[in-house]
Image (cartoon, rainbow, N blue to C red; front, side, top):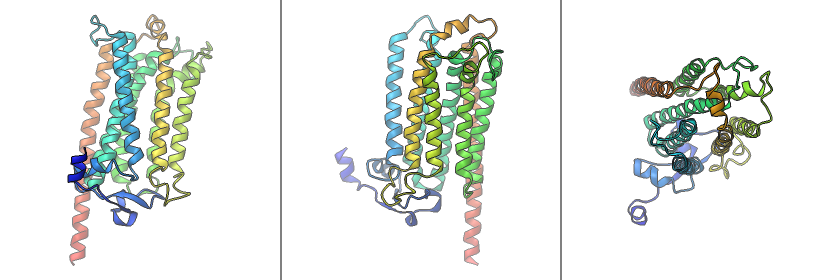
Length: 344
């Protein structure tokens, strides 16, 4: 590492006037990285920039859930299962894998997005797609563990097994596609951050429906040990969104809190939310067999889960590529027209 750093000088930082407008964040006046290539981006992750906390909160979070996957597989490995883990633990494994994918995608986006406008847009579409995959895998886990025994007794109906999974797949894909469009179509709009935050809160609400249906069910399935963790998860998610939306605390001290800003605190808060989610799902794991024996609402089959995840990857990656390709071409055309006007 020392040899690499000695050969390449650490990238410099500058104020918001030294970078292109699409890199500027509200109330952050300095700490913007000046990078020209991928190696500069990697080295800049070791410096005190406005991306420092964004990058390392995701790196450490991804490593933590890699360890959790190893521990889960070591405890419940099964040669008799087609997924090499006892079937009742498979939804929790999916949630852990979704966490690793989401945090890895966000890490890549925050490390490499500063090279150019093209990299900025493309890498954050990767980020949105990884978060969308996490949301779908989490919806499967919530439905498998946290729904009510009788789906018709809940104040908020979660429909049938195939109905809920299909609804979650379609809505999460719609949220992902809309956020990709917002990144390109409404990039200069002051409402853009609020549209993105609303999308994330809607995604959490969709995944929260099984628990809400159980908690407010006519049978009164409340007071379980997992309830407080479910509510704590929602609290951390909502608080993180509020901190990011109001641009705190960098609004109070723009020159000093450029590395610990609202976006960075949002990442920390969301990691706390995910930890609460993991604890709640683990406490609800014992309900898997009870729900599997339910005639009115059986557990989703491995084939149905695989179909949902494959459709999400196929449709989401295709839509993300098309939107990115179209948006980048539009940006190039605008840039060419602007340069042509300057010539005349």
